[in-house]
Length: 437
Image (spheres, rainbow, N blue to C red):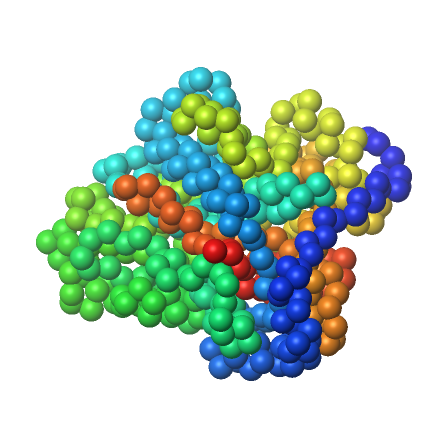
Protein backbone atom coordinates (compact mmCIF):
# COMPACT_ATOMS: atom_id res chain seq x y z
CA UNK A 1 0.00 0.00 0.00
CA UNK A 2 1.14 3.53 -0.72
CA UNK A 3 2.23 6.06 1.89
CA UNK A 4 -1.00 7.02 3.64
CA UNK A 5 0.70 9.99 5.27
CA UNK A 6 1.78 11.55 1.96
CA UNK A 7 0.26 15.04 1.62
CA UNK A 8 -2.54 15.15 -0.94
CA UNK A 9 -2.36 17.32 -4.01
CA UNK A 10 -4.48 20.40 -3.34
CA UNK A 11 -6.66 21.46 -6.26
CA UNK A 12 -8.51 24.75 -6.35
CA UNK A 13 -12.23 24.50 -7.14
CA UNK A 14 -13.82 26.06 -10.18
CA UNK A 15 -15.43 29.26 -8.92
CA UNK A 16 -18.82 30.02 -10.44
CA UNK A 17 -19.13 33.78 -10.66
CA UNK A 18 -22.37 35.67 -10.29
CA UNK A 19 -24.00 37.11 -13.38
CA UNK A 20 -23.26 40.84 -13.37
CA UNK A 21 -26.93 41.81 -13.63
CA UNK A 22 -27.79 39.47 -10.75
CA UNK A 23 -24.94 40.82 -8.65
CA UNK A 24 -26.20 44.37 -9.23
CA UNK A 25 -29.67 43.38 -8.02
CA UNK A 26 -28.25 41.71 -4.93
CA UNK A 27 -26.18 44.79 -4.13
CA UNK A 28 -29.23 47.02 -4.62
CA UNK A 29 -31.30 44.90 -2.23
CA UNK A 30 -28.48 44.35 0.24
CA UNK A 31 -27.30 40.87 1.22
CA UNK A 32 -28.93 40.97 4.66
CA UNK A 33 -32.28 42.21 3.29
CA UNK A 34 -32.21 39.58 0.54
CA UNK A 35 -31.48 36.79 3.01
CA UNK A 36 -34.31 37.88 5.30
CA UNK A 37 -36.84 38.04 2.46
CA UNK A 38 -35.98 34.57 1.23
CA UNK A 39 -35.85 33.11 4.74
CA UNK A 40 -39.29 34.51 5.56
CA UNK A 41 -40.72 33.17 2.31
CA UNK A 42 -39.16 29.76 2.96
CA UNK A 43 -40.67 29.59 6.44
CA UNK A 44 -44.05 30.48 4.98
CA UNK A 45 -43.91 27.49 2.61
CA UNK A 46 -43.38 25.15 5.57
CA UNK A 47 -40.62 23.34 3.70
CA UNK A 48 -38.81 20.89 5.95
CA UNK A 49 -36.47 17.94 5.72
CA UNK A 50 -36.72 14.86 7.89
CA UNK A 51 -39.73 15.90 9.95
CA UNK A 52 -39.65 19.34 11.55
CA UNK A 53 -36.14 20.43 10.49
CA UNK A 54 -36.48 23.52 8.23
CA UNK A 55 -34.88 23.26 4.81
CA UNK A 56 -32.37 26.08 4.36
CA UNK A 57 -32.74 28.03 1.10
CA UNK A 58 -29.77 30.21 0.21
CA UNK A 59 -30.98 33.48 -1.34
CA UNK A 60 -28.35 33.62 -4.11
CA UNK A 61 -29.54 31.64 -7.16
CA UNK A 62 -27.24 29.65 -9.41
CA UNK A 63 -27.45 30.62 -13.08
CA UNK A 64 -27.01 28.53 -16.23
CA UNK A 65 -26.98 30.09 -19.67
CA UNK A 66 -29.42 28.73 -22.21
CA UNK A 67 -26.60 27.19 -24.29
CA UNK A 68 -24.91 25.45 -21.38
CA UNK A 69 -28.21 24.08 -20.13
CA UNK A 70 -29.16 22.84 -23.59
CA UNK A 71 -25.95 20.78 -23.75
CA UNK A 72 -26.49 19.42 -20.23
CA UNK A 73 -30.11 18.59 -21.02
CA UNK A 74 -29.13 16.54 -24.07
CA UNK A 75 -26.57 14.61 -22.02
CA UNK A 76 -29.04 13.91 -19.21
CA UNK A 77 -31.70 12.59 -21.59
CA UNK A 78 -29.19 10.39 -23.42
CA UNK A 79 -27.91 8.93 -20.15
CA UNK A 80 -31.31 8.20 -18.63
CA UNK A 81 -32.63 6.58 -21.81
CA UNK A 82 -29.59 4.27 -21.79
CA UNK A 83 -30.25 3.43 -18.12
CA UNK A 84 -33.92 2.77 -18.89
CA UNK A 85 -32.86 0.30 -21.58
CA UNK A 86 -30.34 -1.27 -19.20
CA UNK A 87 -33.01 -1.99 -16.58
CA UNK A 88 -35.20 -3.68 -19.20
CA UNK A 89 -32.19 -5.69 -20.42
CA UNK A 90 -31.26 -6.80 -16.88
CA UNK A 91 -34.70 -8.39 -16.46
CA UNK A 92 -34.67 -9.70 -20.01
CA UNK A 93 -31.90 -11.17 -22.14
CA UNK A 94 -28.96 -9.39 -20.44
CA UNK A 95 -27.43 -8.64 -23.81
CA UNK A 96 -24.89 -6.27 -22.30
CA UNK A 97 -23.56 -9.08 -20.09
CA UNK A 98 -23.35 -11.46 -23.05
CA UNK A 99 -21.41 -8.77 -24.93
CA UNK A 100 -18.85 -8.65 -22.10
CA UNK A 101 -19.39 -4.97 -21.29
CA UNK A 102 -20.90 -5.41 -17.80
CA UNK A 103 -19.71 -8.40 -15.73
CA UNK A 104 -22.55 -10.65 -14.59
CA UNK A 105 -21.24 -10.45 -11.02
CA UNK A 106 -21.96 -6.70 -10.99
CA UNK A 107 -25.67 -7.35 -11.47
CA UNK A 108 -25.91 -10.49 -9.36
CA UNK A 109 -24.20 -8.86 -6.37
CA UNK A 110 -26.35 -5.72 -6.54
CA UNK A 111 -28.58 -5.31 -3.47
CA UNK A 112 -31.37 -4.00 -5.68
CA UNK A 113 -31.26 -6.76 -8.27
CA UNK A 114 -34.68 -8.37 -7.84
CA UNK A 115 -35.15 -11.49 -10.00
CA UNK A 116 -38.91 -11.67 -9.30
CA UNK A 117 -39.35 -8.47 -11.32
CA UNK A 118 -38.92 -10.69 -14.41
CA UNK A 119 -42.29 -12.27 -13.53
CA UNK A 120 -44.08 -9.00 -14.30
CA UNK A 121 -45.21 -7.86 -17.76
CA UNK A 122 -42.97 -5.37 -19.53
CA UNK A 123 -44.14 -1.92 -18.33
CA UNK A 124 -44.36 1.10 -20.65
CA UNK A 125 -41.65 2.83 -18.55
CA UNK A 126 -39.48 1.55 -15.71
CA UNK A 127 -37.64 4.57 -14.33
CA UNK A 128 -40.24 7.35 -14.57
CA UNK A 129 -38.29 9.92 -12.55
CA UNK A 130 -34.49 10.16 -12.40
CA UNK A 131 -32.61 12.56 -10.14
CA UNK A 132 -28.91 12.57 -11.02
CA UNK A 133 -26.11 14.16 -9.02
CA UNK A 134 -24.09 16.41 -11.33
CA UNK A 135 -20.88 18.15 -10.28
CA UNK A 136 -18.60 20.64 -11.98
CA UNK A 137 -14.95 19.64 -11.81
CA UNK A 138 -11.84 21.78 -11.43
CA UNK A 139 -11.77 22.59 -15.15
CA UNK A 140 -15.44 23.57 -15.31
CA UNK A 141 -16.67 20.32 -16.93
CA UNK A 142 -20.01 18.96 -15.70
CA UNK A 143 -19.90 15.27 -14.70
CA UNK A 144 -22.37 12.76 -13.23
CA UNK A 145 -21.34 11.68 -9.74
CA UNK A 146 -24.27 9.33 -9.05
CA UNK A 147 -27.47 8.12 -10.73
CA UNK A 148 -30.59 8.09 -8.52
CA UNK A 149 -33.48 6.16 -10.02
CA UNK A 150 -35.47 4.46 -7.26
CA UNK A 151 -37.11 7.29 -5.35
CA UNK A 152 -35.05 10.39 -6.14
CA UNK A 153 -35.87 13.20 -3.74
CA UNK A 154 -35.68 16.95 -4.17
CA UNK A 155 -38.51 17.84 -6.56
CA UNK A 156 -40.53 19.59 -3.87
CA UNK A 157 -37.40 21.31 -2.55
CA UNK A 158 -36.67 22.58 -6.05
CA UNK A 159 -40.16 24.09 -6.05
CA UNK A 160 -39.76 25.51 -2.55
CA UNK A 161 -36.45 27.15 -3.48
CA UNK A 162 -38.08 28.78 -6.52
CA UNK A 163 -41.08 29.97 -4.47
CA UNK A 164 -38.82 31.42 -1.77
CA UNK A 165 -36.43 33.21 -4.11
CA UNK A 166 -39.32 34.56 -6.20
CA UNK A 167 -40.28 36.63 -3.17
CA UNK A 168 -37.05 38.61 -3.63
CA UNK A 169 -36.87 38.46 -7.44
CA UNK A 170 -40.48 38.73 -8.65
CA UNK A 171 -39.49 39.28 -12.31
CA UNK A 172 -37.35 36.17 -12.74
CA UNK A 173 -35.36 35.97 -15.99
CA UNK A 174 -35.39 32.17 -15.64
CA UNK A 175 -37.45 29.52 -17.37
CA UNK A 176 -40.57 28.70 -15.30
CA UNK A 177 -41.04 25.37 -13.54
CA UNK A 178 -44.59 24.91 -14.82
CA UNK A 179 -45.06 21.32 -15.89
CA UNK A 180 -41.83 20.12 -14.26
CA UNK A 181 -43.53 17.10 -12.75
CA UNK A 182 -43.51 13.31 -13.20
CA UNK A 183 -45.44 11.94 -16.16
CA UNK A 184 -48.15 9.69 -14.77
CA UNK A 185 -49.94 7.48 -17.32
CA UNK A 186 -53.53 6.34 -16.91
CA UNK A 187 -56.58 8.09 -15.57
CA UNK A 188 -56.48 7.29 -11.85
CA UNK A 189 -53.17 7.77 -10.05
CA UNK A 190 -52.06 7.91 -6.41
CA UNK A 191 -48.80 8.76 -4.65
CA UNK A 192 -47.85 5.91 -2.32
CA UNK A 193 -45.91 6.93 0.80
CA UNK A 194 -44.89 5.33 4.09
CA UNK A 195 -46.62 8.21 5.88
CA UNK A 196 -45.30 10.79 8.36
CA UNK A 197 -42.49 8.46 9.46
CA UNK A 198 -40.83 8.89 6.06
CA UNK A 199 -38.13 11.60 6.06
CA UNK A 200 -39.52 12.88 2.73
CA UNK A 201 -43.09 13.23 4.04
CA UNK A 202 -43.17 16.96 3.30
CA UNK A 203 -42.17 16.26 -0.27
CA UNK A 204 -44.79 13.54 -0.66
CA UNK A 205 -47.50 15.93 0.53
CA UNK A 206 -46.33 18.73 -1.77
CA UNK A 207 -45.97 16.52 -4.84
CA UNK A 208 -49.38 14.92 -4.38
CA UNK A 209 -50.90 18.41 -4.19
CA UNK A 210 -49.01 19.61 -7.28
CA UNK A 211 -50.02 16.51 -9.22
CA UNK A 212 -53.60 16.72 -8.01
CA UNK A 213 -53.68 13.08 -6.88
CA UNK A 214 -54.45 11.37 -3.56
CA UNK A 215 -51.63 10.69 -1.11
CA UNK A 216 -52.05 7.17 0.29
CA UNK A 217 -50.28 4.58 2.42
CA UNK A 218 -50.43 0.79 2.28
CA UNK A 219 -53.28 0.84 4.79
CA UNK A 220 -55.45 2.58 2.17
CA UNK A 221 -54.93 -0.11 -0.50
CA UNK A 222 -56.65 -3.36 -1.35
CA UNK A 223 -57.12 -5.50 -4.46
CA UNK A 224 -60.50 -6.61 -5.77
CA UNK A 225 -60.86 -8.69 -8.91
CA UNK A 226 -57.23 -8.10 -9.85
CA UNK A 227 -57.62 -4.29 -9.70
CA UNK A 228 -55.90 -2.09 -7.13
CA UNK A 229 -58.15 0.20 -5.11
CA UNK A 230 -57.30 3.10 -2.81
CA UNK A 231 -59.95 3.85 -0.23
CA UNK A 232 -62.44 1.97 -2.39
CA UNK A 233 -61.62 3.77 -5.67
CA UNK A 234 -59.88 1.98 -8.59
CA UNK A 235 -56.26 2.91 -9.30
CA UNK A 236 -54.31 2.33 -12.51
CA UNK A 237 -51.05 4.19 -11.66
CA UNK A 238 -48.98 4.28 -8.48
CA UNK A 239 -46.19 6.83 -8.08
CA UNK A 240 -44.17 4.86 -5.52
CA UNK A 241 -42.24 6.91 -2.96
CA UNK A 242 -41.88 4.26 -0.24
CA UNK A 243 -38.49 3.59 1.34
CA UNK A 244 -38.98 -0.08 0.50
CA UNK A 245 -38.22 -0.27 -3.22
CA UNK A 246 -37.96 -4.03 -3.71
CA UNK A 247 -40.67 -6.37 -4.95
CA UNK A 248 -39.16 -9.27 -3.01
CA UNK A 249 -36.62 -9.70 -0.23
CA UNK A 250 -33.32 -11.58 -0.30
CA UNK A 251 -35.21 -14.86 0.19
CA UNK A 252 -37.53 -14.25 -2.75
CA UNK A 253 -40.56 -13.48 -0.57
CA UNK A 254 -42.72 -10.50 -1.50
CA UNK A 255 -42.09 -7.40 0.59
CA UNK A 256 -45.07 -5.67 2.18
CA UNK A 257 -45.32 -3.10 -0.60
CA UNK A 258 -44.59 -5.79 -3.18
CA UNK A 259 -47.44 -7.94 -1.90
CA UNK A 260 -49.82 -4.96 -2.03
CA UNK A 261 -49.08 -4.27 -5.70
CA UNK A 262 -48.06 -7.66 -7.10
CA UNK A 263 -51.41 -9.01 -8.30
CA UNK A 264 -52.49 -5.93 -10.31
CA UNK A 265 -48.94 -5.50 -11.65
CA UNK A 266 -48.81 -9.17 -12.67
CA UNK A 267 -52.22 -8.85 -14.32
CA UNK A 268 -51.24 -5.72 -16.25
CA UNK A 269 -53.93 -3.52 -14.69
CA UNK A 270 -51.45 -1.31 -12.80
CA UNK A 271 -48.43 0.80 -13.73
CA UNK A 272 -45.84 1.68 -11.09
CA UNK A 273 -43.86 4.86 -11.73
CA UNK A 274 -40.31 4.31 -10.48
CA UNK A 275 -41.22 0.66 -10.47
CA UNK A 276 -39.62 -2.29 -8.80
CA UNK A 277 -36.18 -3.29 -10.04
CA UNK A 278 -34.94 0.15 -11.09
CA UNK A 279 -32.45 0.19 -8.23
CA UNK A 280 -30.17 -2.10 -10.21
CA UNK A 281 -29.33 0.91 -12.40
CA UNK A 282 -28.42 3.34 -9.63
CA UNK A 283 -26.12 0.93 -7.85
CA UNK A 284 -22.85 2.75 -7.21
CA UNK A 285 -20.80 0.04 -8.93
CA UNK A 286 -23.08 -0.02 -11.98
CA UNK A 287 -22.22 3.69 -12.34
CA UNK A 288 -18.77 2.59 -13.55
CA UNK A 289 -20.35 1.12 -16.69
CA UNK A 290 -22.92 3.74 -17.73
CA UNK A 291 -20.84 5.28 -20.50
CA UNK A 292 -20.48 1.79 -22.01
CA UNK A 293 -24.27 1.46 -21.83
CA UNK A 294 -24.72 4.62 -23.88
CA UNK A 295 -22.46 3.25 -26.59
CA UNK A 296 -23.98 -0.25 -26.50
CA UNK A 297 -27.70 0.57 -26.38
CA UNK A 298 -27.83 3.87 -28.25
CA UNK A 299 -24.83 3.60 -30.56
CA UNK A 300 -23.71 7.09 -29.50
CA UNK A 301 -20.79 8.61 -27.69
CA UNK A 302 -21.69 9.85 -24.18
CA UNK A 303 -22.46 13.57 -24.10
CA UNK A 304 -22.16 13.82 -20.31
CA UNK A 305 -19.13 12.15 -18.70
CA UNK A 306 -19.19 10.22 -15.44
CA UNK A 307 -16.88 10.78 -12.51
CA UNK A 308 -14.47 7.88 -12.95
CA UNK A 309 -15.51 4.94 -10.75
CA UNK A 310 -13.31 1.95 -9.83
CA UNK A 311 -14.66 -1.62 -9.68
CA UNK A 312 -12.79 -2.99 -6.66
CA UNK A 313 -13.66 -6.61 -7.51
CA UNK A 314 -11.26 -6.19 -10.43
CA UNK A 315 -7.81 -7.09 -9.04
CA UNK A 316 -5.99 -4.42 -11.05
CA UNK A 317 -8.44 -1.70 -9.92
CA UNK A 318 -8.22 -2.90 -6.33
CA UNK A 319 -4.43 -2.69 -6.31
CA UNK A 320 -4.46 0.79 -7.83
CA UNK A 321 -7.04 2.04 -5.31
CA UNK A 322 -5.16 0.63 -2.32
CA UNK A 323 -2.01 2.40 -3.52
CA UNK A 324 -3.87 5.70 -4.00
CA UNK A 325 -6.33 5.52 -1.10
CA UNK A 326 -5.34 8.95 0.19
CA UNK A 327 -6.22 10.54 -3.18
CA UNK A 328 -9.65 8.98 -3.83
CA UNK A 329 -13.19 9.05 -2.46
CA UNK A 330 -14.38 5.72 -1.05
CA UNK A 331 -18.09 4.97 -0.71
CA UNK A 332 -20.05 2.03 0.66
CA UNK A 333 -21.70 0.45 -2.36
CA UNK A 334 -25.12 0.52 -0.66
CA UNK A 335 -24.74 3.87 1.14
CA UNK A 336 -26.90 6.94 0.66
CA UNK A 337 -27.17 10.51 1.87
CA UNK A 338 -23.40 10.88 2.12
CA UNK A 339 -23.19 8.38 4.99
CA UNK A 340 -19.99 6.35 5.22
CA UNK A 341 -18.20 8.37 2.53
CA UNK A 342 -14.46 8.81 3.12
CA UNK A 343 -12.74 11.63 1.23
CA UNK A 344 -9.15 10.43 1.09
CA UNK A 345 -7.40 13.84 0.94
CA UNK A 346 -9.30 14.94 4.08
CA UNK A 347 -9.12 11.65 6.03
CA UNK A 348 -6.92 10.78 8.99
CA UNK A 349 -4.14 8.26 8.44
CA UNK A 350 -5.61 5.86 11.02
CA UNK A 351 -9.01 5.99 9.31
CA UNK A 352 -7.46 5.26 5.93
CA UNK A 353 -5.58 2.31 7.38
CA UNK A 354 -8.79 0.87 8.84
CA UNK A 355 -10.55 1.46 5.54
CA UNK A 356 -7.76 -0.36 3.69
CA UNK A 357 -8.30 -3.44 5.85
CA UNK A 358 -12.07 -3.28 5.32
CA UNK A 359 -11.69 -3.02 1.54
CA UNK A 360 -9.28 -5.96 1.45
CA UNK A 361 -11.78 -8.09 3.40
CA UNK A 362 -14.82 -7.17 1.29
CA UNK A 363 -13.85 -5.30 -1.89
CA UNK A 364 -17.33 -5.84 -3.38
CA UNK A 365 -18.84 -3.74 -0.56
CA UNK A 366 -17.10 -0.53 -1.69
CA UNK A 367 -16.47 1.60 -4.73
CA UNK A 368 -13.85 4.29 -5.30
CA UNK A 369 -14.11 7.46 -7.34
CA UNK A 370 -11.69 10.14 -8.39
CA UNK A 371 -11.83 13.07 -6.01
CA UNK A 372 -13.66 15.99 -7.59
CA UNK A 373 -13.16 19.37 -6.00
CA UNK A 374 -16.76 20.54 -6.33
CA UNK A 375 -17.20 23.97 -7.81
CA UNK A 376 -18.02 26.80 -5.44
CA UNK A 377 -20.77 29.38 -5.66
CA UNK A 378 -21.32 32.66 -3.76
CA UNK A 379 -23.47 31.88 -0.72
CA UNK A 380 -24.77 34.04 2.13
CA UNK A 381 -22.95 33.12 5.35
CA UNK A 382 -23.44 35.32 8.41
CA UNK A 383 -24.67 38.23 6.31
CA UNK A 384 -21.93 38.20 3.68
CA UNK A 385 -21.13 36.37 0.46
CA UNK A 386 -18.67 33.49 0.79
CA UNK A 387 -17.83 30.61 -1.60
CA UNK A 388 -19.39 27.24 -0.75
CA UNK A 389 -19.27 23.95 -2.65
CA UNK A 390 -22.31 22.99 -4.72
CA UNK A 391 -23.68 20.22 -6.88
CA UNK A 392 -26.82 19.92 -8.99
CA UNK A 393 -29.74 17.50 -8.76
CA UNK A 394 -31.51 17.79 -12.15
CA UNK A 395 -34.69 15.79 -12.74
CA UNK A 396 -35.47 13.76 -15.84
CA UNK A 397 -39.03 12.57 -16.49
CA UNK A 398 -39.38 9.51 -18.70
CA UNK A 399 -42.52 8.52 -20.59
CA UNK A 400 -43.39 6.15 -23.44
CA UNK A 401 -42.78 9.01 -25.88
CA UNK A 402 -39.33 9.99 -24.58
CA UNK A 403 -37.81 12.06 -21.80
CA UNK A 404 -37.83 15.68 -20.62
CA UNK A 405 -35.73 17.61 -18.09
CA UNK A 406 -37.03 20.07 -15.52
CA UNK A 407 -35.45 23.47 -16.27
CA UNK A 408 -32.95 23.98 -13.48
CA UNK A 409 -33.29 21.30 -10.87
CA UNK A 410 -32.11 21.79 -7.30
CA UNK A 411 -28.65 23.15 -6.56
CA UNK A 412 -27.46 21.71 -3.25
CA UNK A 413 -24.93 23.63 -1.19
CA UNK A 414 -22.61 22.65 1.66
CA UNK A 415 -22.98 25.40 4.24
CA UNK A 416 -19.82 24.58 6.19
CA UNK A 417 -16.53 26.00 4.93
CA UNK A 418 -14.60 23.41 2.91
CA UNK A 419 -17.28 20.71 3.21
CA UNK A 420 -17.70 18.58 0.07
CA UNK A 421 -20.84 16.66 1.14
CA UNK A 422 -23.86 18.73 0.16
CA UNK A 423 -26.71 16.41 1.19
CA UNK A 424 -29.51 17.85 3.28
CA UNK A 425 -29.03 14.94 5.68
CA UNK A 426 -25.49 16.23 6.23
CA UNK A 427 -26.58 19.81 7.09
CA UNK A 428 -26.57 21.07 3.52
CA UNK A 429 -29.03 23.51 1.99
CA UNK A 430 -30.44 24.40 -1.39
CA UNK A 431 -30.37 27.15 -4.01
CA UNK A 432 -32.80 28.10 -6.72
CA UNK A 433 -31.36 27.25 -10.14
CA UNK A 434 -32.06 29.58 -13.04
CA UNK A 435 -31.92 28.62 -16.70
CA UNK A 436 -31.86 31.87 -18.63
CA UNK A 437 -34.25 32.35 -21.54
